[in-house]
Length: 404
Ligand SMILES: *[C@@H]1O[C@H](CO)[C@@H](O)[C@H](O)[C@H]1NC(C)=O
Ligand SMILES: *[C@@H]1O[C@H](CO)[C@@H](O)[C@H](O)[C@H]1NC(C)=O
Ligand SMILES: *[C@@H]1O[C@H](CO)[C@@H](O)[C@H](O)[C@H]1NC(C)=O
Ligand SMILES: *[C@@H]1O[C@H](CO)[C@@H](O)[C@H](O)[C@H]1NC(C)=O
Image (cartoon, rainbow, N blue to C red; front, side, top):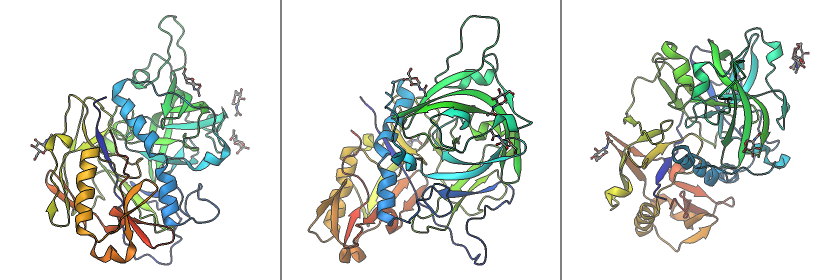
């Protein structure tokens, strides 16, 4: 299969001077929403005991291979097989960041996973088979409406099963795979979606009636992809299709990041690179990664391994759901070899990472810079190195089994 996407994931940093404020209170300024790491203190999915940073990252990253399969399947019309029902232990495989939204009238609070590579939103509805206890209750919302197979939105959903014949309109029923190992069945419905102080009326989303597999976010998912049913498309002129997000560092257990929607309120000093559309995978956000430097050395990489190609779907995508950045094998090897040249060995292997060294050498470790069209992004050390839980090893934060 000629498929190569590098998924990139950035931690961003926010600095706050607010001290006396409850860190978990959701701010309500218009069009600004908290983005909460799923394992953090402020998340309803937070484990009872805070885990170490490395364990948290590894736990989150454990779903990356399936995530990758899933992203690959988006263009390829490949069927992703579904797995049997997972045990309760899998509760935490729920995507990485959640936002607090209100659905219906009066608003029912849901913590939905933010997914930049998905178009549709969906939530577990009352009486869903296999869902967790927090569900959306259509009966309790005065603004709820059902959508049948004849509405144009219905044609936009993947995994649709509308009857092709018959005169009575039937509910817009669909079944989708998610995360590589899970699937759900839902009907397309509409209701008011409340984001901070904004309300989007008649928002079309999937009302889940049954799930299988362990990767379905327990309180639903909010798709920020490029498609017709994504948040940006359905909110129309309200946000003019503009959003930005700032992801909090995993080290700040209490801290949240932000999702900013619309032009006003965006940071005014930003460096940018164009986001590209690839018809082969129309939901995804691509960027033109043109090179990688380790320290001051531009790593020699055959351009075709990075090239954006609208015909094959190849290129670099930015995805909120993939924890660790991945490169195709030749690119990974070139980066790693240059990194090893500049850091004092010996090197050892730890789990998926093959370039681990004494943490005392970290002070001299080179920074990694990603070169995009019009933007050089030097990663903070926290994004290029990970420490063993005992703290005496530092590893280059890219898995040694990259994409093939
Ligand atoms: C609907 O609202 C009533 C009254 O607030 C509540 O008792 C009931 O549990 C709700 N139903 C569902 C299915 O959430
Ligand atoms: C919602 O209302 C319908 C019709 O009144 C009823 O059949 C159904 O059981 C209710 N569902 C819940 C979860 O209360
Ligand atoms: C979705 O469809 C697949 C294939 O037909 C099936 O195996 C799976 O059980 C369905 N999922 C749900 C939740 O109904
Ligand atoms: C990506 O960058 C390369 C190198 O600068 C350039 O040749 C190419 O046209 C760019 N591709 C797109 C789609 O911007």
